Amino acid sequence: MQSSAESRSTVRSTAIDPITDAILGRALDGEGLNDSDALHLMTLSRDRFPALFAVAGAIRDRHKGTTVTYSPKAFFPVTNLCLDRCSYCTFRQDPGSPGAWTMLPEDVRSVAARAQAVGCIEALMCLGDKPERAFRPYRDTLRVLGHDSTVSYVAACCEIALEEGMLPHTNAGLLSREEMRDLRPLNVSLGLMLESVSPRLRARGGAHYNAPDKEPALRLKMIREAGELRIPFTTGILLGIGEDDAERVASLRAIEELQRELGHVQEIIVQNFRAKPATRMAGCAEPESYETARCVAVARLMMPEMNIQVPPNLNPYDTAIFLEAGINDWGGISPLTLDYVNPEAPWPQIDSLARACAARGYRLAPRLPVYEEYAGSEFIDAALQPRMAAVSLAHTAAK
Ligand code: SF4
Image (cartoon, rainbow, N blue to C red; front, side, top):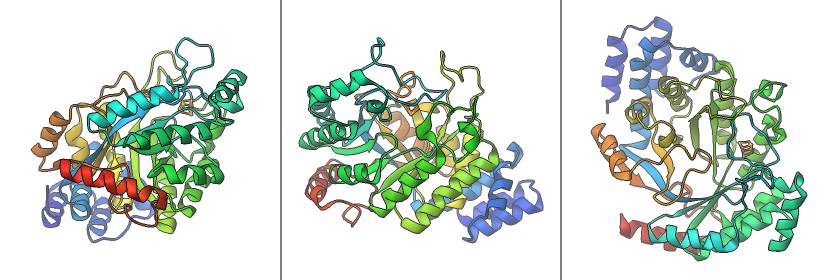
């Protein structure tokens, strides 16, 4: 941890150019970054990182203190069927393939009961995008389960998780306003990664060429509508899928503008692409940790008060770098279930993550799947308030 004065002195003692010096000085003085400043920082060379991280870390400390959070969760991959075909994804399957699944209600209840027993609070409903639009066998499965849409079935799964004492957070891909309205009384927050505003990624050969629901305009529309519905929202950007530095800045700016207007973006995930075998992007370069950390630092300077998160299981050896660069959260971590989207990447042990945080002067603490600043407010549906209160009380007692 550094004070603002120490950060200023780190900036001064590090060999940096006058333009960077001026931008970092303005950021420390509480001025926001314009796009040109942000792009300048997004392209800084490695020898400038100590100065950038010193300022980003000081701004994080100023707004978030010395507590870094995580959400104890269980992952419910309700179905891995998906109408999209992102070039980097190993989660999605076609009906009939050996790895395809749709969780049954009894599976959901069993996982929820075991998760609650080991202290998990967040029920992350994370699944493929609208498979009923692409696959007749899946529509038949839904019908047998008594539902005519994935969202209707996910809502039933959320009810089961609530009955078992968990708080749902759903990321079911692109949702309409009506679908979000239906999920709101059953979810303390919803999520959708923006990933990138770059339209180039949807062109032939791009990471999202075969993923119609990754159209940036559609995703921005959903994030906006979530704000209009007063739903706390998690979003983020995915680094290394073909976007350039200006597009990274544009993606962060798009989120910042929605947050400034509607106030519902509770956190931003800065996630690094991982090259997976047997995908079309298997041979593509992965972003280095320092590149991801530079983006974290720029995000922190663009949005000083935002909760900013990097998934720890995708960066197991670089905890210190991200703390230095300005994160204040590690996202969901499960003692029970895999990260089904990245099953090759185990979650860290909480004890060892706590020690790593402590070594940098930070306290690791659990949080709910909705951040404190939204709990008990107009952002939480009245139907959920009693359950929120009960879970919050138990959570506080266990701390
Ligand atoms: S990343 Fe998500 S939307 Fe893309 S194919 Fe995989 S499950 Fe579907």
